[in-house]
Every structure is written in structure tokens, then in C-alpha cells.
Length: 371
Ligand SMILES: Cc1ncc(COP(=O)(O)O)c(C=O)c1O
Image 1 (cartoon, protein in one colour):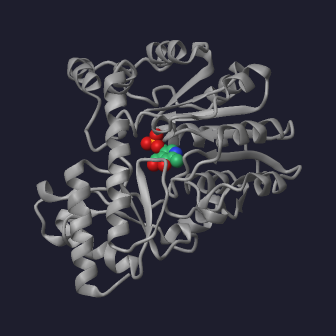
Image 2 (tube, rainbow, N blue to C red):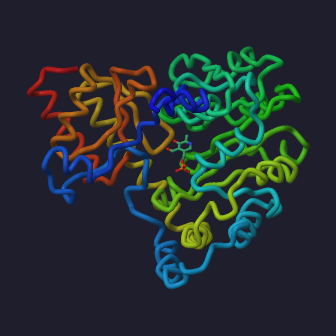
Image 3 (cartoon, rainbow, N blue to C red):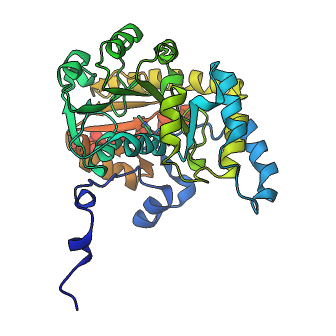
């Protein structure tokens, strides 16, 4: 015994999987640094600092007594509510355990070993993970000025390309491409390529590309959305994919029967009705972005202008500053994994949270002579 290890047996694609490093949870940082969790602020995962949508919270409270029952595997009510929201058919929606899951399901349904997946070099890491997981080849296209270079992405497409991921605003850089340029990009793709527009942060924009007319025309376009960001439901894990009935029907085949729990489905339905909360969250975010950019400028730090609910700034010894901020109870996100070792990403918080972050960062800069 002992000659054949699990590693010998495992699917080689598993060994190629880079590890996804999420924002550090409050409890972990509290334990690591001996801090009171109540005094820690997490500005690391682009969550909503106002908490969950109040309408979703009340709906959840009512459902807790029913969790002895399985959820509706088809998420009928949520798909019907989304259909009304978007003016599409319920059969054009697939609900997932976060939009992360729907993008993995899309990849699972369509990717074969050797296919190519095109995305931006500083875009959400899950696109690369999805490609590698199914034996496809990740093609990371450089992003000058931290923005998707749509001409370069088009040029990277070959006859082997199956999927293209595009995010607007992009995470982690917060950059955007104009709605017209995204629509032209989508129209210019060859027939064998599926475009997935990741709209995780689109609610924070005033103006966004609407790809529904392209879906109606039969172009190979799908969009992913999430309840984790502006709706404040990251802990419940709900997201969705929308596209033509044909593409959604195919991806439904690889979805597990009860992938989204009963409480999350109800919360998402209620959150869609909470337009007051969405409006407030957007306003607080715009104000917070102004506060953070002004504060960073005062500290003499450069940042990437952002259209999301987060901001990338450049700083020497980013790893040291990341640690030092944690010791002061502030969790941000290091970006070395995205090829930006001298940058950090901070999620826009409440006015008080932003103030505390800027004050603490200022004190650290004074004591460490870092820029
Ligand atoms: C660009 C982007 N897409 C998708 C997701 C996944 O969100 P979720 O799985 O919580 O819906 C995230 C999460 O941070 C993201 O930044």
C-alpha cells in the first residue's frame, strides 16, 4: 500500500487550479491579531456596507420556519420575478449559488479540452479558474490603463475560442468600456464564440450596455448578475445568468437540482422590489468614492478611477500596508495575484468606515515613510 497517491489519480485539471483567495473574514483577522471582531471593518470583498436589503431581511425572517422543506429546484418564483424585471421570459434565466456558480456552469456546459477562453489579464480570476477546470486554455489579454482592450481581445480570438468573459465595471480595477463599444464588440464576434458579460457591478453605473436586443437577435451573448453587491445579499449566495432560451436550457442540464436554497430564493425576490435600497446604496457609493479618492489624493497616493463599489490605489510595500491595516482592524484586498503587487483594493464603505480607513492609512504612511 502507499505506492499510488491521490495526486496520481486526480484529474490533472485539478492540479492546475490556482487557489482563489477571498477577502479575509472578520473572524479570521480577529483571531490572528487578537482583536475584537466588533471593531473590525471588512473592506475587502465589495460587499454592501449598508447591510442587506431591508425587504429581503423581512422576507428571510418569515421563511426560516419552512427550511425543513426542499427549495423549489426550478426557482420558479424568482425566475418569474426576474422575467418581469427584465421584460424577458422565465425560461431565459438560470439561478445559481452566486453568479460565480452560473459562470462555472456555463463553462462546464460548453468547454471542451483545448478550447480557448479569452478575458482581460486583470479581470476577475474566476474566468481563468473556469477555463482550467474544464481543460480549456486561458487567454489573458493585457489591459493597458487597467481597462479591457476590446480590439486586442477581438484580435486574440481564434477558431478555438469558445468563451469570452467581459466585465463592466471590471473587478478589481473598476474600469469600464462604453456601452456602444461593448455592443459593437459583441456584434463583431464570430458565430462560434459565446460572450459572457459579467454585470456584477453594473447597478452602480448610470449608463450600461443593454445586451437584450442582441440576445433577441440570436447573437451568442449571455449576461451574469448577482445579488451579492448592490442588494447586499453576498452571504446568501444568489446570482443568475440570462440569455436565449436555448443557451439557458443547455446550461440548466448541468445544474444540480437544489443548487439555490429556499431562503436565498425568497430574499432575492424581495430584494428586486427594494428599489429604495438600491437607490440609496448607489448614492452612498458615489459619495464614498468621492470621499476615498479625495482622501487618497491628500495622502499623495495614486488610484485607478473607479465606477464600481471599490477602488484600487498604488502604494509601495502594499503587502506590509495590508498587514498593518489588518492589525488596526481594517481588511482590504492585496492584488499581487492580479499582477499588481504595489496596489491594494479597498471596498467603498460607509462615511465613517471610509474616514477610519483614510485616517489609519495616513497614520501608517507617517510612521513608515512609505508612498
Ligand atoms: C466581477 C465579479 N463577478 C462575479 C462575482 C461573483 O459574485 P457572486 O458569486 O457573489 O455572485 C464577483 C465577486 O466578487 C465579481 O467581482
